[in-house]
Image (tube, rainbow, N blue to C red):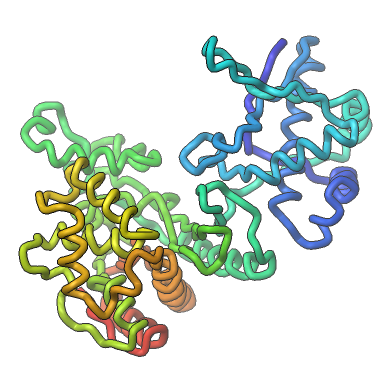
Length: 431
């Protein structure tokens, strides 16, 4: 008995497929729930591939797919492929209930340390449908969504508001369509700096971090050509927004593989063969918190007596994102174990010192306000990116900073000031 892995390569389309799906998930088709429709389309495609293998080899062929919710977490295989747990499981259950799919549920024997993933295959009724509609079926690509919604456990879920999700997706697609018309490369100097011999790596270990970052997401492939050839990172600039807690107003930041490049490497990027400049909002989230309190804070929020600036930044991040003080203490101790915080002071002391320096913000600390701040800064980012798209210029965001051609620095600075003032009522600090 053979098995193939469940994959998101393609989905089935065509009039007969549309009619079948309309009967299986009628409510989702009517409401425009694209996740449920695409999940059904994708399950049918995988069953069709297994059926085709079986017809050509004469051996029973199944599709191996996990029904374990944990397998769909964002760092696991299905999460990386943007599969969503509930729509996929719903599609499996619907096809089985309708007699169109056979299923052998998986199991896990913890004592013996063995297990088996769930296996599915087309039932005879669906096999006959495949054979009679084969000429009319089409295979279509199922692109990765550009606006992703996750629940509290970071698993992908259908958007809570389909119409709002569609509008957001159209804007992100508009930004991506324009951005990908430009050419983003890693310069010749960067290529020399990143691709090095073993002896050079020994002499300059810090460069290994750059090498790993550029290699991540396959961004180094072109750089491995002849010395001096640029590394084309254009496709690594494709953006997507990620929302959290099953809400479209929590999180929502723009993400792209190119953002994993260290700051020192980003200075070597080129847009349409022109050097770039990167401007960022200084101490973005602390200033946003003060703006929400009606205060125009102009100082450096990370200057705390008895605390290094790096430690203060880490403590600020923890205070804003932690749900409660106990969670904040754990996060500080964990950061200290990983070498992210170097202070030997107790976690409670660090929290007290930071809270005393920013007393007006204390009611915002330990409240999980970070996701709300991410949503606010992502709205500023979206407005800036749309301005650049309409003007015909490329702008690559790195959360609270933005990369443009050096000749467009003034345009970027103006856009950052105007959009920040529009969303907060105060002027930003830009560096």
